[in-house]
Amino acid sequence: QVQLVESGGGLVQPGQSLRLSCAATGSASTIYSMAWYRQVPGNQREFVAGITAGGKINYSGVVKGRFSISRDNAKNVVDLQMNSLVPEDTAVYYCNAVAPPGITDYWGKGTLVTVSP
Image (cartoon, rainbow, N blue to C red; front, side):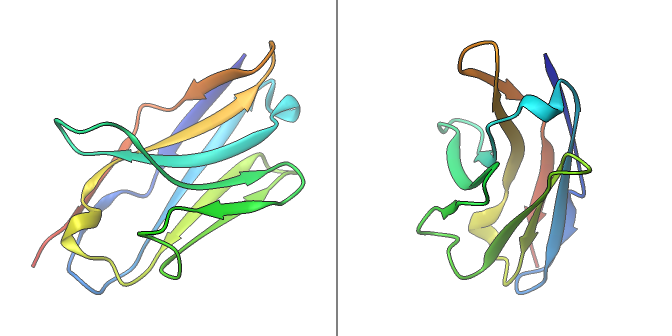
């Protein structure tokens, strides 16, 4: 079992930056990959960025070049640096981990990011 806790959300103006952090506890050493997703009320949850235990990184097209994901395997923490934020980035951001048993998805409770003038 893995537990995930996100932090760092808040209200920022367009063009500003924000850094999200996700701390994994429990069987964190067994995690295969971690990722950030986001969801706007009424919409499906969408992939933002992900990183494997080996360091392979993927970004969604809408955030590539503005967001950066990083992972500290020793501390079991994954961060999302978000730059040049736009109002369309407003959403609840969720941390995701894929870990045993089998291929199990674990989710944090989410942190709200609001980008508004």
